[in-house]
Amino acid sequence: MSAPAAVPPGAAPPHGSTAPRARRRRLPFSAWHLVLAPLSLGFALPLVWLVLSSVMTNAEINRFPPSLWPAGIDLGGYDYVLGNAMFPRWFANSSVVAVTAVLSNLVLGSLGGYAFARMRFAGSRLLLGLMLATMVIPFQLTMIPTFLVMKNLGLIDTLGALIVPSLVTPFAVFLFRQFFLALPRELEEAAWIDGCSRLRVLYSVVLPLARPALATVAVLTFLTTWNDLTWPLIAINHDTQYTLQLGLTTFQGQHHNRWSAIMAGNVITVLPVLVAFLFAQKTFIQSLTSSGLKG
Image (cartoon, rainbow, N blue to C red):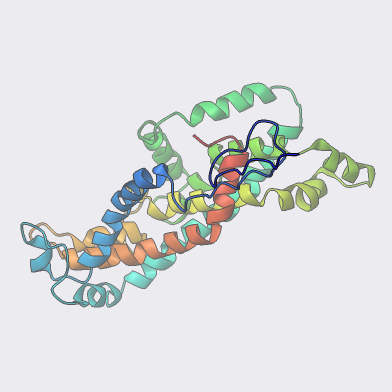
């Protein structure tokens, strides 16, 4: 009886052989990393330059060709911004508007999304279609009607003019609806058999499972309201009601621009946005992949 032929290392086992195949070694990177790494650096470059220019002098920022690295750390821009008496007021105004918009979108958006996902009533499809149609209307077309409504309500030049139009957005309702449709109905039916009302089912059963959607709506609403400049520029007249984005425009004058202060103010303004995104990054991506909104 002859002995079986030895298989050279790295060669495929012969056909019909029961010997275990050698486990393929996975490389720590792929070809996609070679493409995505330069792209990520390109997206991060404006933020890096913003941080670096915030510690430059005005002369360095205005130099041509521009300086890519500061000659020294100059904190004059931060001193100017933080020493501005109105800056804490602007920060508080932006926080009030953004936090109120986030909470109202979570409450009203989840209620509307649950109604469209689970309840059938007369005209529900028509209302859903009209709501989705409003998502494609640009803000420039609704700007004047919104201003007239806020003026008739007496809210112009108050924070109410910034809060009321952001109380609930069609995107929040749509995102919650898509997420609720993916949840099995059996979970809610078991709660109904136990005697729970619809609101109790929504609060105790559905919303705990919808944390990715809640995080996504919270992050996107915060980003939208915190970074908005156009609508506050129209609705607000006095600097005591300015938001941060609107207040930063006062650092630009007709004859002189304090670029270091503008850059430092933008760095301070971006920090809450980065913190909010980093905390909700995992659930944010999970929601996009589970609700069918990925590209």
